[in-house]
Amino acid sequence: MGESGAAVFRRSDGCLFAKCVSHWAVSDLRDERDRVEWLGGTPVPCPELAGWHEADNGACLVTTAVHGIPACEVSTEAVPRALSSLAAVLRALHDLPAQTCPFDRTLVVTMPVVQNTVSRGAVIVDFLDPAWRATPPSDLLAGLQAELGRATRLESADLVVCHGDACLPNFLLDPETLECTGVVDLGRLGVADRYLDLSLTAQSIGSTGMNPQYSSADADAFLQTYGIDHPDRRRMRFYQLLDSLSWG
Image (tube, rainbow, N blue to C red; front, side, top):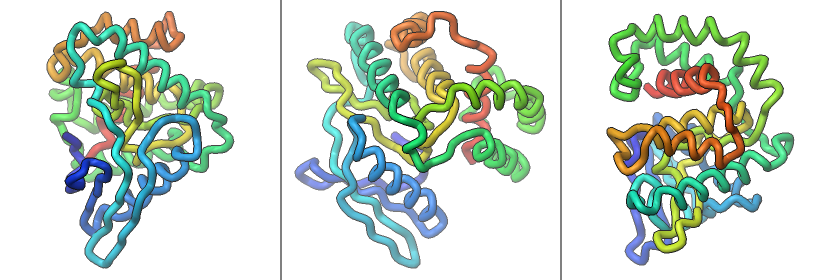
């Protein structure tokens, strides 16, 4: 269900996955390989690196399977337990010592990516919130730049290890216990403001068009379970827009 353009294959016994890309995406897949290997040395559940193959025409990353169902596929009745599990695993990730993580996803890294995507006219409009689609991406970028000073100050005081693409499909849950069995799609993992993750998870939970069993009230419940009773909505909007403009 990913949007990266990679081809993903599952071995017949279900124990291994191979993610294959063309030559233009080798660098991104190499980044994911390094992050899988690093996170595998922590208590946070994730796939294990099982192989890497690189050639002139592309590359292939092989990882162990994380068994379970994506959090976007749980039933309505299971949502409360799923929210608790999501909050717990994200808190565990954010509690890792940030100084031990070698990957940088701070605004110094991510803002140039957004600027490049906008300048190339490569923004994927379908990835934008419907409320933003009628606004030219250059104007949306200008809004981000106007908030950059505040966001940078807040970021410097709240750096954690972030997943970087913390939407519901990237959390796998045991279908019986609803415990999180692992986080996947780790190509954007790195040190950043915790709101990078919190904003995307809350947005994914509150997106009733994509995940109708969840609701905006569930998004608030997730944040409260994580430990944030009064979320900074301005900060959340900044990171939601930053992420939306970064895909191209």
